[in-house]
Image 1 (cartoon, rainbow, N blue to C red):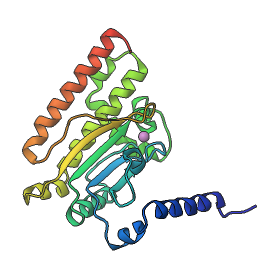
Image 2 (tube, helix red, strand yellow):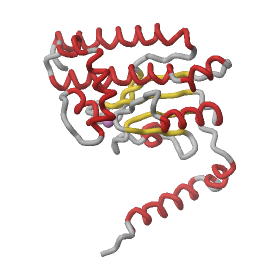
Image 3 (cartoon, rainbow, N blue to C red):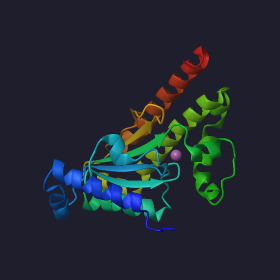
Image 4 (cartoon, protein in one colour):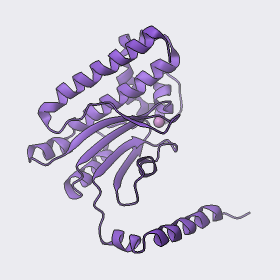
Length: 227
Ligand code: CO
């Protein structure tokens, strides 16, 4: 039995030659430098690949992914990616992207054990606990999960704003905008949760507005039943 993953390497050869045929010099240009405008912080879920969803090419988006798109100030990995992307590559946009039907968020919502990741998902438990009273008012399980997926985006985007990396960039007047989006596995669409903040003073109002809009939207769906 072969251990070579030949199908993947063959697929890569086809992709490289098609890319080169479509745009001669593509790889040579990328060799010179990477100058992405965007840092994507998303879930590790295989169904949410950053560049493909955005219709972008290699070189366009710097990516950090982990289980349930969590941003915590003790995570040296995420902070290192953010610091490199913001300080060195000068990305203008940091986009925290969650998705509906997220396994990590589901586990947090239902206190379901996964394994080692339970410790990581504690951060999503914190989000659930913070909004528990409101979440418990949503009877429909799927709708409550959708709501927690969105709340997790708002909280993690808020956490991204609070990192020293983003705060320092804003202090020196560098243009960095933090966004929070959610992705639908069922339709391939990204939605902006409108928490975008481009300076320290915008963070609290943006969070408040986005949270208010989220709750209004879910309360309306709850009252009239799922569409
Ligand atoms: Co996920």
